[in-house]
Image 1 (cartoon, rainbow, N blue to C red):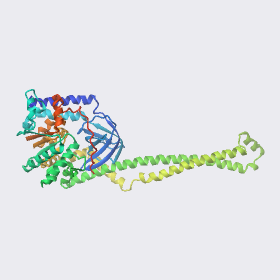
Image 2: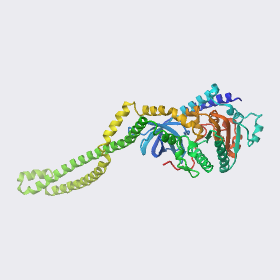
Image 3: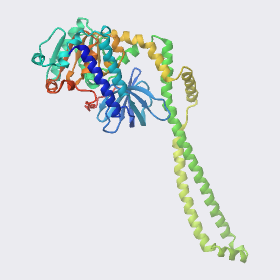
Image 4: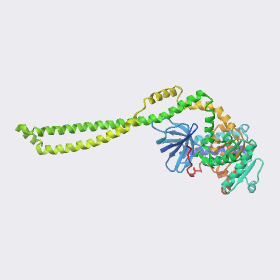
Amino acid sequence: MKLEELLTQSATQLLDEREVAMNEGLDAPVDIPHATHLGKVGSLHLYRCETFPGNKMIADVPITLLPGNDMEATEGYLLGCFNGALLIQTFDHVGQTLEHCTLIPDTSGFLETGAARLSDMATKPDSFTLGPAERLVPWLHPTPTSETGRARDNIPTTVLSMIWGDDQSTRWTKLTTLIVDQVRKNKRILLVAPDHETVDALTGATAHALKMAALPHRSILCRYELPLRKEAATMPIHDLGYEAQMYHFYAKANANKIALRKKYDRFRELTPILAYKRDKQKDLNEVKLLEWRLLTQLSDWQGKVKGINKILRDYEALPIWKRMGMQFTGKNIETLAEYRVIYEGKIHGLMQEVEVAQARIKELIPEATIPKDLRPEYDELKEEIKRLGGTKKIREMLNAGEGTNRQAFAQNKRIMATTPGRILTDPLFRKVPYDLLIVDDAPRISTPLLLAASGLIRERIILSGDTNDLTQGEQLPHACWPREFLKTTLSSPAQPTPVG
């Protein structure tokens, strides 16, 4: 099979899986009972979302988060599933904690974008560097005549090399040694792993190797998107994130853009605060209404007790015909005393409820009180945001202004570490070529993803992975090795240390 045919076949496979995703409801909204903000890197925010078991979602899929409380929705990406919770990356801060929010994945759009990317590679080969990618065809789609070539997996070639091993640390030592050697030759490297957890660990190992080789790892190495952990291989990797490095690098490049971003960030910061204050004000109004009702009932019962006391006090002075009329209605001396005891019990119970309501009012007043300077500031920011077209428009303006800078910044990085899902759908990777592609855990990556990543490579591809995974892959039909998107559920490795 030729590369063009395999690209077309992979694009068709993604479109078929898109239909499967739509039929299986992978684009359906997911209820999130609780979400927690874990940290911020640059302009990106990391949230941990508790969800119900059984949800099928694909990593790197675009998502929309509806936080509730009359707040605006925000977009982002799903990073993975860890210990039964989803980790998502958003472009906006929507609160420290969220209750009963909604997550809307765009799985069909993700697969459609990937299919379009592979179709472009097949129909417009001049826009890509497909020379090294052609060497992958016999490995991704073996024929009976090429099966015998599997015995020479460990023999390095000029364009395609293999590094297999059962021990990950030994394998990564070979990879990092190779990376250091290629960096010294001024090569640009695309470092790929199947999931974000593995990318973080591999980024830390690479940073450690570069540091041991006396190379400036902070200026050479970049972790695309947002790291899930603070450090890996004893190396702090949160400052190696692409967004963090670019955000700090261009922080002082444009004063107007900085001012606009500050207003935008301040608006997003005040929105959940005022939403919280608004909810507490509603609670305060309800408790005050309850207090008023209790005081009204209390006043009625006190009036009745006061009337009984007056009757008992003036009973001896009442005419005999009034006494007889009172006894006829059941209001004699004995029954009036009993009524007074009942009424006083009612009053005592109401007094206790009033005390509880008043204590709750004292708690709610400081929580619902808005500082004098906060409301005018928020109203001014809201008017400015509205004048500029809303938060989505402002985010588009900021991204449009940084589009060229993002590409230039990526081109200045010698090593870019990321997942194949981001390469498949992110337009940035269509414009930035690399000399080498290093893929770890290659048997765990599907054919469309490997092809998309290989289309950016000009010189050489290195595949690495566990020998056991390779053996299992060889026992499967070629359509299942590497695995298909929708036949692979998100794994649940150990919870990473979230970025601070």
